[in-house]
Image (cartoon, rainbow, N blue to C red; front, side, top):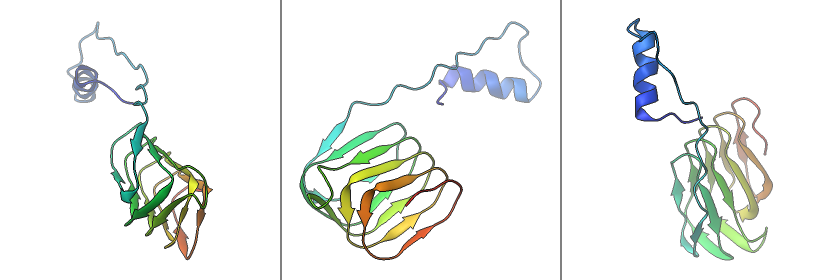
Length: 132
């Protein structure tokens, strides 16, 4: 869940005991961004929140690094979208699928899911609730 700056300010004020008696908070969930289509070439780094990245069919060079929270990265299919590098997942609640990764990787953070991808090589899995 993402909060706007005024909501964060109100939460902070309440945390330090300076909250207004009539304060209200809008806890509306953040809206996912429109899918971003990425052509073959250098592998993108995803560091924001609530992003949807679509990797076209082809080969991507370099590590696929996913940080932030609630991101989705999908390809055109295993064996069709190929990341020639490692998968490095951090943050929480990120998903990767429909692509192949040649260099193994690391799945950290919590509740990250790479079960929809083919990961060749060694993959270290840590955190809570992560799926390879």
